Image 1 (cartoon, helix red, strand yellow):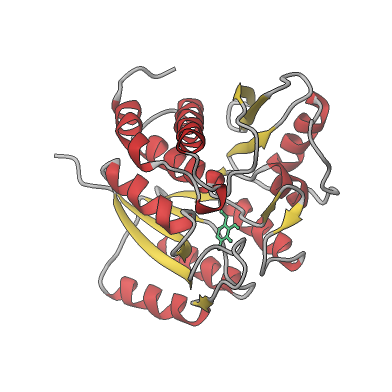
Image 2: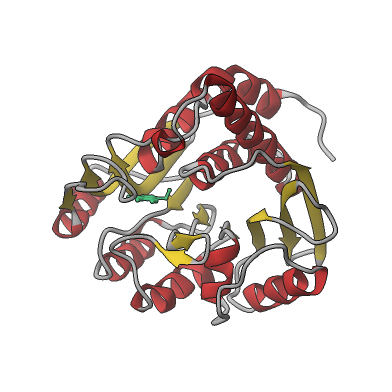
Length: 287
Ligand code: PXL
């Protein structure tokens, strides 16, 4: 009998706006894993809504971890996302020292910004902390803005050339992460499309995947991508297959959101696409 895998989700709970834990928990759970949230903060809505309220959980991270240690929690996978304060990085390092065993997969989404700008509450001082978390990770999933921030580059406007993307991957591979995915790439070579670059530093393989782009910004799409990637990868899919499954699921969720005419700030309408994700992570075809 296979024991159910436990996945720790270190991220914020934005009550309105479908991002972070609000998307990671249902996606991870519905794919058959036990989702264990460690909230970095609880917000009335994500930070792109004016007037949001944030209850910062910095002081709760260590007591929660201590309790989990006392009750013998172990994790097959740890996913990190948005930090509500700079001080949380140090506490997460200690959490990883305790809970990242030799067979625990660490997936780091270095959530800092998008479209060339930092998110609210995040600034330059987070970059070196995120870089450190990336150096411990098996998989990192920055968007283009975050990749440029991690590489110490000025954020530039799309479209990006092949050599710009290759250079980012090369620099990111120096963080020490085994697998790198840069999401949200608009490339000169694929007008009207959006995609990601997937680099396997173990094999030295890089792949670019593209799909038609729906116009506009979709907050929370990076979180849907990260959670569906984690679900696929922890289901035993290869790195490359997991990237393609996450792209498919995120793309379908964007299309559904657009079709429904929902306001983008409320996040992706991913819920009705979950049966497709469950099917994709459970099919046997593997490349
Ligand atoms: O989706 C990224 C994200 C996560 N968490 C919070 C955010 C955002 C983006 O705005 O505000 C709180």
